Image (tube, rainbow, N blue to C red):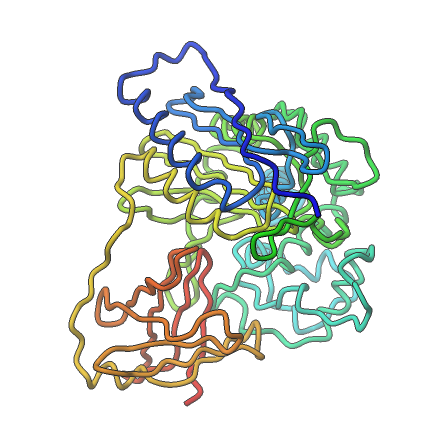
Length: 460
């Protein structure tokens, strides 16, 4: 068995016209220390870029790009970026809106001929904001061994999805679903007469100056392409093969940290869409009940300890990625990892905390909540997107605990941050919260938030 390759640290710190302050130099030292200590728990290698006020202040690569050939990582190397692809799909759709080819309020049946009547109230905007109610196509069961390896045309997924009921009435809820962006890619092809790949190359990559961003094709020779890995316990193995026809416009792009920064700069300079269009993309969607989600058109819009962030992560076999822009500080961070270990979420958050001058989260409140309220939260909560999984919330010694039915979390302590919001300190890899939902004074469900928000319905 191939032994784990030793840590290889590639000193690739950029130097440029940006005048580094004493604080920046200390920041670089702190980030070096953080990544050196933590990265090998996450992936064989990674690349990190940080820009401040439009100038790169930090760009380094760590570890190994190919374990079998013992190739050191470099900052120009190219990774799968997974769901970050959704940003590019969203901008392509918004370009077509600006050109008058489509409208955000167009019914999707206008472009998807023969689609089910269940979709008659779904708009382009519902797809962009994940408020359509269409389940994720990754939940489809094709009754085929290793189906993830098979090439499927988008229309095959669309036809299969059309046979299933909606999870909710369009516009009433947010539920992150890859199906939304697969449908958007299909619509781009129907409207333009070009393949998704061709449209992006001509209208996104070229005008933005992205020379190292590609639609992934495993048969194509792409220089500096990084190998992806999965970690089983303490041992890495090559990631399983996945057909990029299945990732498609929801997750099939490749890029490197330099191109991700160019992408951000092209957006900020309005090379691709107008300011008012981009502002709308960066605005959280409002649901029909007046509540606001944390997703706009292709971006999550969140608050990191008082700082507004606009960004997206990517999770695909063999790779994890994250890029975030902090508009108030004019700071951009991009991180790419060649492993699908979810520990990267925590590492990225700590990098971001350092960069924006926030402390790491080391302790949380544990407020006193009355027994009457705690008792009302006890029960079983099921998740519509995965009906086989449920969360059991129970009370012991005047405190709430939770178990996940799949065994990935048991006896998890809930620390009260408010009367309804609880933090789970036992989930160390990703900051996780549970917020209980009341309807007419009765507990009807909860939001399980772990990067993405999932709603569970109380069944007992």
